[in-house]
Image (cartoon, rainbow, N blue to C red):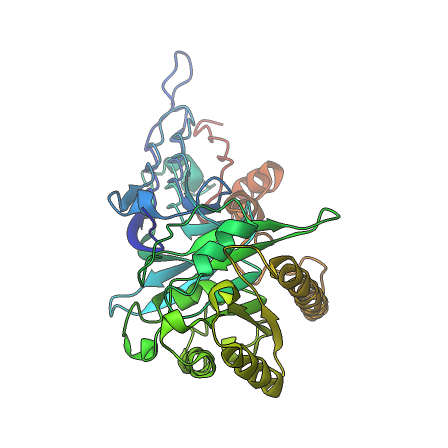
Length: 422
């Protein structure tokens, strides 16, 4: 089952309570406080995994709760922290947080394999009473409760990662073409809307060259108004570098090939993508490189239909090929024509992103600029916590110096208990 959009509920674990405890040991009267801190709650992460190509596993199991942190105990024993959980998603998944008004706000775009982003942060464990020891308060009877973990409703939307997007009317041979040039096995039949979900295929060329091709379900006139399958699946070609129009030039379609091409081009212009999820380096769909392939020339009866479409494509400045997806005629030349487009657009985007990364690094005054997709580049929870943790020597010095009580959550080094008789 192909599922490209789901809503899930994630709850990070609460932090454990700090302990109120005093040292009780033979020959050591008034041993002082020794209550440990509570453990931190587990967090929820999204992980881009190459082993997943759909979100179907979340359709029937939408609730995920990370474990809470254990409570602190005496003898300065810190509670066990809750284990983080990772939710694997297909590469190309866009994640949103849904607010109380039902509005979705994007917070991550997991494009690369292995991208990992924090979806809900676990609560910080409460401090035990040993934290509050000072020269003026040697027997504190105070401890903190753990901080609550974050709770969110998320929307996950998958967008296929492909170099070439195949578009056109239903039943024009799109699935036949991708089945011929790749190992994809889409459903092929002689009726409209045979393809109900997108299909991906890897096209292998000579000299170890390859690119990914996506077969998108057919479009019809008025798709932007919801007719047919609507524009739902056009989101899967938002990331493509080249669009390949498949036009049926045979008389069997009963349509004018020139008008058929114009209808699809108008639908591309009417499509309004989500600005938050569209690749910022990509052009609008209607402005991207486009190639026209006149299909089914093996059953073409009137050559004038083919010539009319060729002349119209030339007038639009579009590259034109006549092919037969069934017999393979003209297909190798078409694939070789697509390759330079894929290479050129990839090089342009890589150059633009490197410039943006360099500019971001200069603006921040560092070389480690955050990732624009919320993946690599952001500090982990452990790194963020380490920045707020004070060294043991500094903590002991400030404690024995009789300074004011501190309220920094996240301190992991308990203060030395003070003997009231000392």
